[in-house]
Amino acid sequence: MTKEELISYLTGNFPEAEVKSGAQYAEMTVKASDLHETAVQLKDTAELSFDYVFCLTGVDYAENMGIIYHIESVEHRHTIVLKVRTADRLNPVIDTVSDVWITAKYHEREAYDLLGIHFNNHTDLRRLFLEDGWGFPLRKDYVDEIRIVER
Image (cartoon, rainbow, N blue to C red; front, side, top):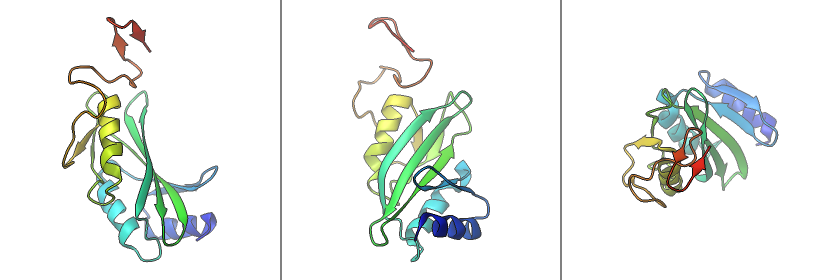
């Protein structure tokens, strides 16, 4: 599907989502409570067949944390951006999609390690790069007095 066809399809089939045209891809924003179910539908719907997460980005907003997923259909060769925000910035929690897309497993661990975003039901949620107790260096309020790092 083209970007315009994807926008039309997503708008018609995901009425609770906000769908718009991004600079490069169709973008769909869903509520945190709808994330996992939406992910399953995006993967299992034959017309979409989104079977691959090739990028997951955690974002520190002023009031909460966001997760941005770039997902692709290898079969159909189309891509969308799926966005979601946590309810809380200090204790950000979101459901894992690593059971839907296995490639999300290490991406989620990275977001946990660097931003402190907890992914419910993740099978191996532990730090990927840093030692326990390090803090979350990609948070806007991160301060490390020992290494004199301040954001």
